[in-house]
Image (cartoon, rainbow, N blue to C red; front, side, top):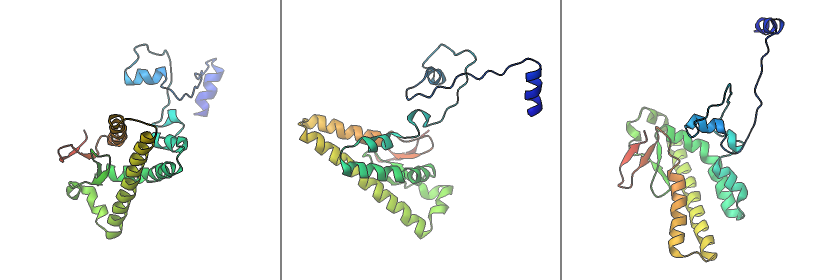
Length: 191
C-alpha cells in the first residue's frame, strides 16, 4: 500500500479527498441515496451511519434530554437503557409490538430456531422482566403526557390524538424481520 502511494506521488498524481461535512439534517447525498433528489453529486463520497445525523442519539434519547418533567425523563432513560436488549429480543422473534403501543411475548416464538436460547428459566425471567419494565415506562409516559396536555387545556379529541401519536411512535419502530400483532390480534413477521 505504501509503495502504491509513493508511486502515485512520484508520478505526479494527486489523491484529492472531498471536504467532509457533518450535518443534523438530511443532506443532498442522503436524498440521492433514498431517491428524493435527482441531481447526482459528481465524484462525491459518502460515509454514513444509521445514527450519524443525530450525533449517535436516537429519538428517545433526545426526548429524554428535552423533557422538563423529571419522571418522564427517568422513564425515557429507562427505555434507552432497555433499547438494545429489546432490539435483540425482537430480532430473535421473541417479542413483538402490539397496536396498543406495548411489547408482548410473541406466541409464534416457540416455533423459531432462536427460541432454544430463551428456554432457560433465567433467560425467560429476564425477558419477562424487560417486557414488564418497558411496558410500565411506556404506559407511564403516555398517561403523563396526556395528563400534562389536559392541564394545558387540550380538548378530549386532541388528547386522544396525542395518545395515538405516542402509540404510533412505538408501533412504527418495527423493522424488517420483526414480529408484530395486527389490530385483529394475528401475529405477523414484517417483510
